[in-house]
Length: 559
Ligand code: NOJ
Image (cartoon, rainbow, N blue to C red; front, top):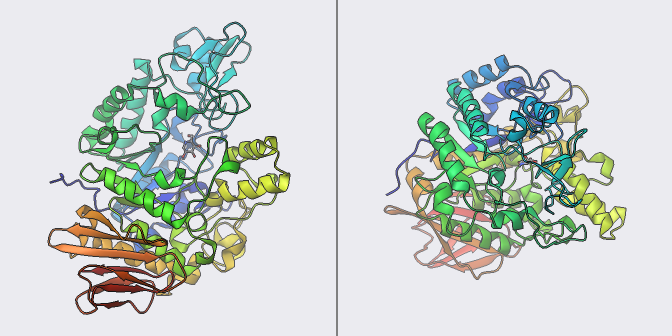
């Protein structure tokens, strides 16, 4: 029997502060904007919020490049605002989870500035500094945002390593002083009363023993960081130490952004005694991606989606809890990515919502997902802010795509799809700001906005509200949190169905991605005995041993 933890039954919500709500109308969302909307989140049913970084940052990568971990960036507000957010959230029973970005800092962080002044001094050891060997860079790794991971330090023959943007120098975790300073900082925030942290890019903190070349996988003669990480061992020592020095003594929740965990390591990362409380399930987000770049990616079909979810559920069973998502600030909008075109309507959005939300694990809702917000259409690269999209655009052009074709690719995968302002109403700029928003609002805000959905019992918003209520219903809570996921009808194309098997209780979750009515043989089902708890269709029919699903229908039922 799994040890129960305070966070197991929560429903989490990710806020991208820059695009959530702009309280001072300078075009950029802020912490006070979050405070103003706490009642809204409460109404939705949220009890944990993860806020993307609000620390001092030159914003080369939207705050994931931190120049002072102890300060709030003035564009987002002040430390007093942050304290107020913690206080107001607490009053409403909402825990605040901050983003922990410690694989790298900003090249404008004091540590890096000091390292540049004296690469061979104390602060030089805070980073990975190397010199060219025989005129060649130390190794051929490609940074996630393109180009080599090595960048020269100003006025010096030293090079520093950055696996992300060149304005994000990697911190040297091998240096115990660096680790101490990181733990000190984490504890500073936890002492303020944070519920925990989402831990950014953490799998990158351990580098292989040697900076050596790996086989090149593109014409740039560089190799993907995935290859490098696959060849790296020993990250556990750092992660265990961090947990024991910070999260564990505070009883804090931690969720790791863990890509590329190795087979057999799941329990180390997310088991009862794991480094983190939970890790995100990214299996479906990486499905179809290619090391060649976005232009070679394949969009997952509903059956791919189902397979990914079930693989993850099976591997995590008895181990711990995944944090489940359909989107975040780095991914396209889930409804635009996983739903076939003809299913991108309110009914289809509810279908996807129920299928992922009822899986075992901690559901995370990304801001706007609860309204069914969609990808934006980008037609020219200057409409896009995201650095990763700009790199991928270039990769497309280098591969011979026309600018128009390149934009089609970028538009599909751009991180800016999820970063457009939250659509509060049909007012100018969707009610997000009275100023000029830093990133343009999606043109569809007149149709898709909160105001329109709030009082409507059939809206996507209301459906999410019902899902959350169901998760909290004392009658079903235990099964929804702890019940085993038992996939059924796996071979049925376009159908995703599973049981959640609790103690003396069994829930059925079944959805039809197609537009045709389907008759599904399900053992033990019977029109009279089965109690529909939730559906996106007025009628939910069953006969002896058969469940009938209309096109795009989803049903959650008690067997
Ligand atoms: C993952 C974050 O989610 C992403 O937005 C960021 O660019 C990288 N890590 C680097 O911090």
